[in-house]
Length: 142
Image (cartoon, rainbow, N blue to C red; front, side, top):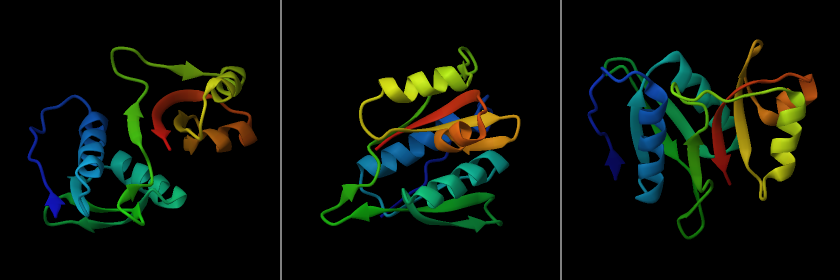
């Protein structure tokens, strides 16, 4: 089963559309989903592949889309529970290293944050290692 929802390209940000497609596909136990091909979605998919929450992805240049193959464990259980956008155009969330440490300490579970820094988009663990803060883009609830 594959999900390909046509959404108007006039949206102000591709991230909410990208996340909603992934979350809907996850909830519906879809094998794959097609998302818009942008530099941001490609970088996020590289990161998702790195931590193993997707099986892989394929760029479809003729459609200007990326086909994302979702990963499930035995019994159709999801690898991730939910991916949410933290920083939004109407309310941006920035953290320095101290606030990032507090954020990680307050969280119960094994959540992962993706942060846009002056050195590029990184996982929260990379930010802690490099002693750098930035804008919190996403929260992956495991």
